[in-house]
Image (cartoon, rainbow, N blue to C red; front, side):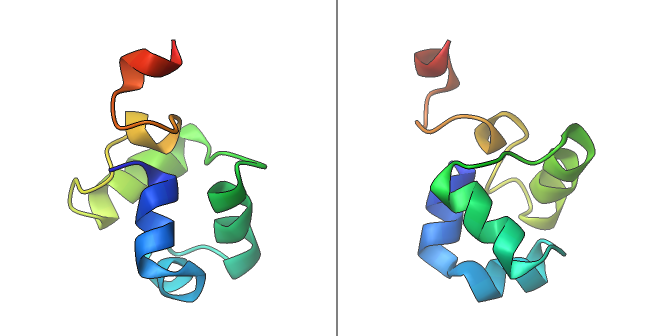
Length: 68
């Protein structure tokens, strides 16, 4: 699942708590204004127990090869 889909599914406030980030940061990821840095993307993959993988933090589609 992409990071955007994960945030849409769970909501900004909930994701802010789970992903240890500010609500505005979560919103900027959801809107595509910004992406998490490498260390944060690794943490997201860990905190979501693989529901969002490292690469899925950077792609809008479920298949990362579509974004290349």
